[in-house]
Length: 129
Image (cartoon, rainbow, N blue to C red; front, side, top):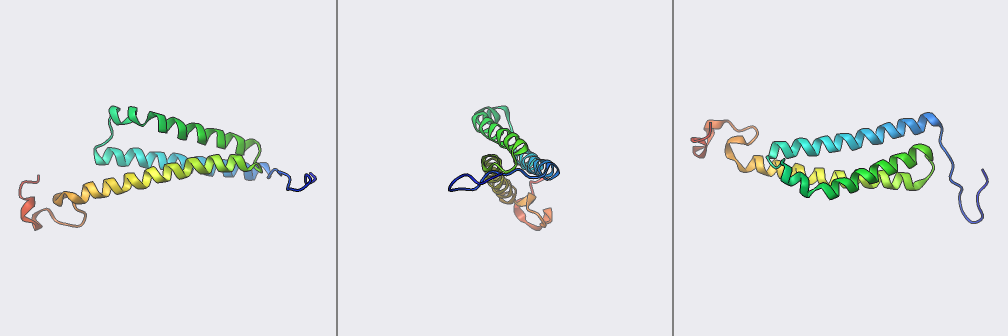
């Protein structure tokens, strides 16, 4: 494919490489989503009310990820597919980092649940089960 005047042409990668990259991007998106749900369940903030309030953001992330993966799968050299899939991953990573921070702070604020601390080491833990 010839370069257009004044720029580079969009080239396609091999089908095997595009398939592997699509699977890897999908795996990262699914893993981050699973981590967000798991940490919300562990911190006790997973409920229908919270899910309903986040529905708009969830839809934006899902649509961005799906469109990015479809464009990337059909035209691996197209930077728009990479940008859309990358944006979905960065949005999920941002939410996952906040969720991890909230979960770790919630667990650390309860003395009985602090990692590595025995339950009987503190006087404030006498009422903990």
